[in-house]
Length: 180
Image 1 (cartoon, rainbow, N blue to C red):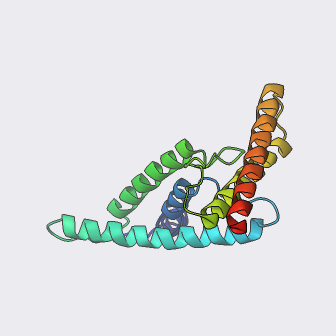
Image 2 (cartoon, rainbow, N blue to C red):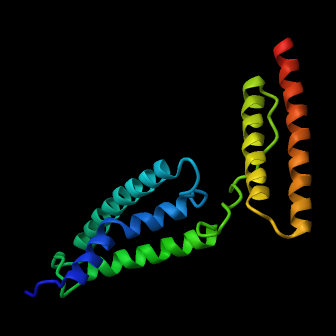
Image 3 (cartoon, one colour):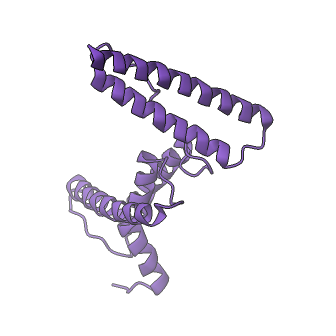
């Protein structure tokens, strides 16, 4: 049995306790950014989630390897099957995160479009208004972060005006429901 060198130990530690979880977290939450006033809180969230997800993935992959191999599974540096599988999981998760826009300068557009409110009542209208406000904040953020293309700036300003008009209409409908 050979002992691992310091770089191998560091790489193994990161591969078991951080990288797969970080990649999966970025794939699931591509809109999370470690910037602004809440950067420290978001950093703690991301690191904690990466650690927990990495441990869970390591246990799951180890269990699958244990069950899948007839002679059992033992993790050795000379036979890095666990590390190779975790690296593959991390690569797939990084590819998914890249495709979802996790590493772009601006956060991606929410995956589900904002739908109109149902005819159920004021609570649904309030939720719809909150979704419109989130969308308006996202558009204002894009405008603030320096859109250099005038056509894109005009499109964003038009979208912001559409959101404002729809918010006013929804607020009026909600007030009418409360007045009943």
